[in-house]
Length: 130
Image 1 (cartoon, rainbow, N blue to C red):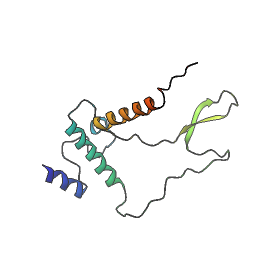
Image 2: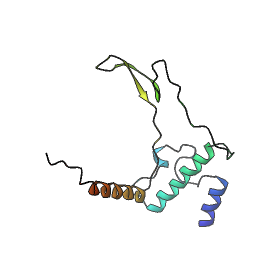
Image 3: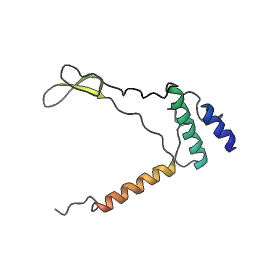
Image 4: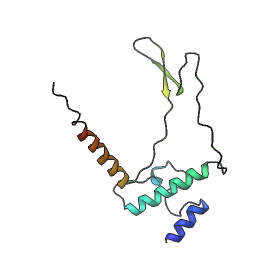
């Protein structure tokens, strides 16, 4: 089993019967909390393989995505939102350019929650004594 999984990773070939082939963001291809952890890990491996296939084969560093500023100097804008203006100035509102969600397994999610709870406890619980 481990040899087959390792071979799939080295060949950058998706694992069979694991999610929707060629559609890494499909609901069936992302790890779902509450399912078997091994299944989540195999789906995560398929997500990584899909990302590796999407990248160019060269190991040369790729330039980062840059968004050109418009005349107003705004960056990180995907497109204008039709018929939406800000309340204060009446300026056009834009859809922000965001990063895609990163798939996580249940154990990774629990580790993040525990880490955030530790930070919250260390900072006094975030409560004010006003």
